[in-house]
Amino acid sequence: MADITYTLDKEVAVVSLNTGENRFNLDFVDTFISVFDELETKTEARTIVVTSSHEKIFSNGIDLDWLSGLIQAGKADEVKQFLYRQNDMFKRVATCPMITIAAISGHAFAGGAILACAFDFRVMRSDRGFFCFPEVDLGIPFLPGMLALLESAIPLYKMNEMQYLGLRMTAEECEKHHIVTRACHKDDLMNEAMAFAKKFNKDRKTIGEMKRRMNRNIVAAMDNEDGAYIERGRLV
Image (cartoon, rainbow, N blue to C red):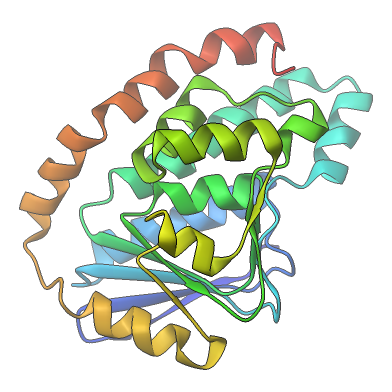
C-alpha cells in the first residue's frame, strides 16, 4: 500500500511521499491522486509542497519490476490502465487549482523527473541527487504528453540535450538553466520551499483557470495523442 501523507501549515499543504523510492505503480498513482483530491475538496489549502521522506531519493519513476511482470504475464489491459492512470496523475498536478511546488529532496529519475515537471515550481537539494531522464538508454521514447510536460518546465536547448544524452543534472545546473527555482542544501530545502509557498495565498478559482489555459497543450496531448501509442503498445 502506497504511503502518502500530508500536513497543513495554514494555507500550505505539505505532502510527503513515504513509499521507499516512490516508484509508480497503480497503487502509488491512485493514492497520489486521492491525496490531491482530498486537499482540494476537504481543506482550504492554496499551495501544495510535495517532498519525499527517503534519505536520498525523491522518486525513481515507474516501478519497472512491477510493470515488467505485467507485460511478461500478458496483462496488456492492466498495463494500459496504468499508463492512462499515470497520465491522470500528471494532469492532476498540472491542472490543480493550487500552486504546486516540488521540493526535490534527492534523485529525481525518469518518471520522477517527469512528475516534477508537472509542478508549477521546483526547488532542489544541492548536496545530493540528480535530475535525469535515462529513457534514451532504456530504449523508451517519451509519449507526446510527457514531452509537453518537459517543454513546460525546461528550456528547449537543454531539454534536447537532457533527453538525447540522458544527462544527470545537479541542482546547481538545474538552477542555472531555470529548471528549478532554487538549489539549496538539504537542511534548508523545506524552509526555502515553505517560505516560497507562503507567498502564494491566491484565489483557487483564478489559479485553476489560469493553469487550465496555460497547460491546455499538456492535457490535449495526453487526451488526444498518447492513446494511439498506448493502445497499440507502441511505447518503444
